[in-house]
Image 1 (cartoon, rainbow, N blue to C red):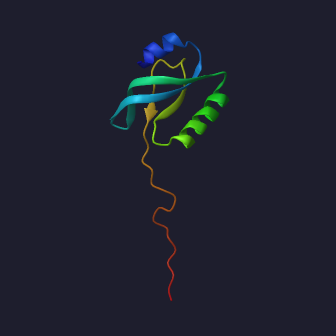
Image 2: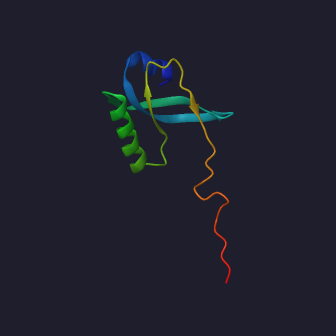
Image 3: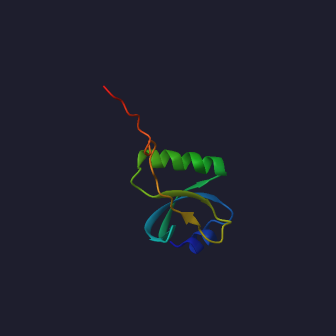
Length: 92
């Protein structure tokens, strides 16, 4: 499904969705085809469901969204890691 089809099928709902086909444009993730994984009663439930799914299957691309959004705005950020360039130096 496309986002506009999802919005029509699930008006004013919190959802957990999976990107079936997606691509990157600049720093934005564009979802070409999505599947509704779960309908949730509120944002907190959607976040908890997302976390559980992401933990169980980290290789899959899940998002939690509300269908009141006209467009999905998913920004990609560069992950630099925890340590960065600040490892301790020891002598001896």
